[in-house]
Length: 607
Image (tube, rainbow, N blue to C red):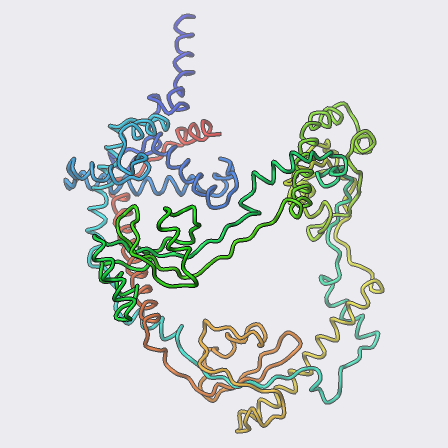
């Protein structure tokens, strides 16, 4: 009985072994009908999504963050949809042949070698490194291709009417001609209002959020940067000259020319083209198009003398100004070269570059000094040294700061310090943190001052300025409303005696720098028709605007492209909705199961 009991415990204990290693213990995380979603499929899809987010954001994404963001549920939902469609392709007998799978495989750029063609060794190596084999990978390609046949059939014929795109263009491209008059504080007949003490106190009481100091973290820190140690670095003159030579291309730049090249099959053809160009019968562009080329196909960019063979370099760099030279024998055959411009060369001698090089070298050397002593600084803190001790025994400087998220300058200019200051808690042990420029710091939170309403007398000037700005804007708005009434009853904008101007044919996508924020939205507001008026306050001024004329969008290629783009986008969206509805119907019909224990095991393995 004891032996059988031990065996039973072993069986239970090893039951999850295959799951944790994506092996044969528990090999699926879910299914749709008979179509399974395997553990490796889910793990690979989740990894791929995480890498994609990391590539977009430039920051590492932990599994816990991915779970918090709901990424795992998104991946699982996608795989369930794929399984539903795969099951349906199998049920109705949709499949693709080996030739199609081969074409799909050959088209994958990841499997191409240095020759640009499919490389079997690269293919095998990449599969092995990702824990996959050819059979499973190619079976996945076959499923993908079959699924594409099914979804393509579902999406075929889904279109949107031309009127859909035209409605969007009519809205975006509508043109309005607007006349405006601008009121500023100088136009107030009564002058700038003056507040009383009671006005200021009432404003202060009504807007406490404007005068509340944010939570402040009182922090003591010790830090050192390469810039602090450059005076301690001895510079070697020979090393400076070596650094100059290593970066010689930054200091010595020979003349370069903007060149295009047109290659011909024979010298006679090239010469005939050169003669036609010289006689003014054709141009370089026409000769290129006659050979079936666009100008981009002939562009060599900016080239130096050393980039060209000797005969070509002599012809191209021997030309004064711009023009066409040749024919010249190139590595591709007889060619004409067009020079479109010259980038003058320059040379900065070592003596002029020395100071810049010295700063760079001293900074690098100082950063190495800090890196070499990093372990020493860590050991001091680990042995119980305070930040004050650290500053006394090392080159690190001691400082304090009342830090808020708005702090800037000094150590607060470093993102690494900002992140550490926001995260540190009272009682945390100081740790060495590296800065982006090679410096280091350690900090201690001495206390937190909660957000506090600042005393009235301390912010009196700010309160006065805010009250005056509001009073001026209200006075300007009141006068603008009276003047707007005059404009609405027939008075011309130009007759108001105010600075005025007219903006012709502006659209909803336009921008007028001299107008307050929200101007475009205001003059295109629903219900504002030709002859209508509105006022736009903001930025210390109030604008009276009148819509003089409303014109339909221009009939041009840009608007036609916008219309077609919206039609295509809407059709694609409708097709995706149709595919999603079809997949959901299959999921409902076949039933969906999810193995939560397998998901947990995968997440544990990916930690």
